[in-house]
Structures are given as C-alpha cells and as structure tokens.
Amino acid sequence: MRELSLHILDIVENGIAADADIIRIQVEESRTADLLSIKITDNGRGIPVEKLNKLTDPFVTSRTTRRVGLGLSLLAAATKRCDGKLGVAAGTDGGTEVAATFRYSHIDRAPMGDMAATMVTLLMGNPQIDFVYTHVIDGAEFILDTRDLKKKLGDHSLEDPMVVHRLGESIRTSLQQLISDADKPEAREKNHGKTND
Image 1 (cartoon, rainbow, N blue to C red):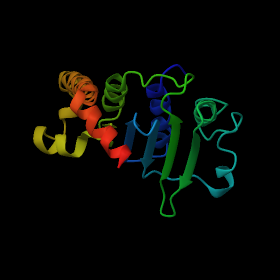
Image 2: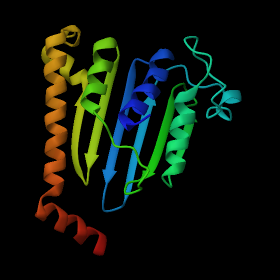
Image 3: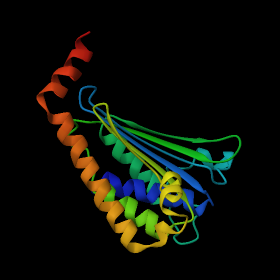
C-alpha cells in the first residue's frame, strides 16, 4: 500500500468485522524523536490465542471475503522496512490492539496519506460504530470522538452524507493546521529545547 492511511483503513476493517462498537485510532508523528506510531484498538471479539502467532502470515485470515490475510502482513513488512515494528495484542476481556512504529525520516516510509478521506469512509460505512481518532504532530493534538458529535448533533447525524462531508473537510483543515503549527519557528525552538534538556 502506498499510504499509511490505507493500512489504517484495512486494520480498522478487521475490528469492524469482529463486531466492535468502538474503535480508537491514534497517530503520533514526532519529528524530533524521529518516530511515527500508529495504534488501533477495538472492543470486538478479539483474536484467539492460537492465531496470534500467525497474524502476519499472508495465507492466514479470519475474513470470509478473501482467502488471504494481507493487511497485517503488509503492515508488518512496512514497519520492518522502516526500522520499526508491529505488535498485536489480544485483550483478556475481548478486543485487539495493533501498534505499529516507523522511523519517521526513513526514505522507505510511506506518506501518511489522506486521513480525512479514511475517516469519512469509516464514518459513512459504519454510523453505528463509535470512533475516537487522535492525531498528534510534534505535541499538537487533534481529537475526533463520534460520541461527542452524536450528543451535539443527534444520534443520526453521521448517517447524513452532508454532515460527514463537512466533517471530512474539518478533519482535513485541522490536520493542515497541526502541520502548520508544528512548522512555526517558535514550535521548532520549543521542541528542540525539549530534546536538549
């Protein structure tokens, strides 16, 4: 996959297939620490212990829509290529956590991609699921929690294509603002000051 946002979409689909009703997506970009981390957590059925050791095998999948399980194996290969790692943990009370790390500056690291489009796709296709999306760039944070949105706009608001479209534009603008804020000279000085102390 050419963009990390597509990896995220694929991994989240696993949680949806496992009947999760809340999925957390956390992306943290730290240029000063030269680290990009992605964590996806769901409260679905979880992964049977016997499958945990085979998760990155492309010929093993629990999905009925395809015969091979490329999602985790492709993500594992992408992290390994970029001096990172992939970890998958099954919760004791159900649910799964997938954590991936990459060296931020690695020449082979795929770009983040269009997270706004990824979130719009997830929201439009799964209005019954709650998503908590957190994106941090050099300490500046953006959070979207659909539970809060439903309280403000009404439970059926995320079934309205116009609402979701505007939400996608808002996500895109917020992420651009995070990047802009992180690129300001005072932010760079602040971050460099932290690493030197």
